[in-house]
Length: 231
Image 1 (spheres, helix red, strand yellow):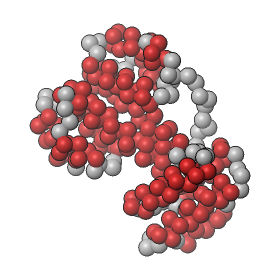
Image 2 (image 1 turned 180 degrees about the vertical axis):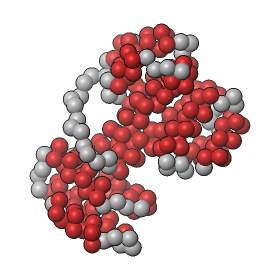
Image 3 (image 1 turned 135 degrees about the vertical axis):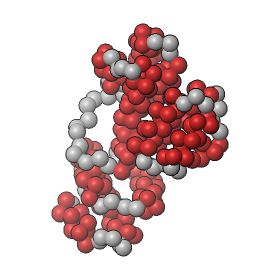
Image 4 (image 1 turned 60 degrees about the vertical axis):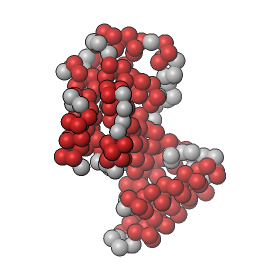
């Protein structure tokens, strides 16, 4: 499998995007057909995904097919990687909001936030990080049982040597949501033009910068100015 992926990556370079997509799908299907364990599928998928990159349009087609395939097989292994990426980005956004507001990230808060597994919990904490009066108030939210009951350990994932496109997609989507959520929390509205502009941004470093501007800008027109500079 690894040798075949290497060969196809070398054979099908620029100008053969459709063939690269077909072979990438074929290799992923083989992971399931050979009956590998879940962790083996994830490790091999990350390698294949890193080795055979696709342009955005072909990447979207690839993921549409993968989503359908996993639904049919009732084996949502690969698509779970996207959720891992979203969770990582959500944790970073909470800590970033704390840093922007209070110019520090206390060690106890950083440690508690990094232990949280549920993206929806982190999204709630992101709102509290934006609106809380001080760090002690935020600590109270962290200790709240309503948060903790949704944060049961799910086991440690093995560290993968490759960052898959699924993780990147999850990170980007969550980064956009965090910016929009922050704007809505501060200004009680998300103008359509801003939402549409953010929806077109694919670079996570740009979204991270906009997240900071959303936390500190005086008004929405000022945020629009930042948006035009960065896009």
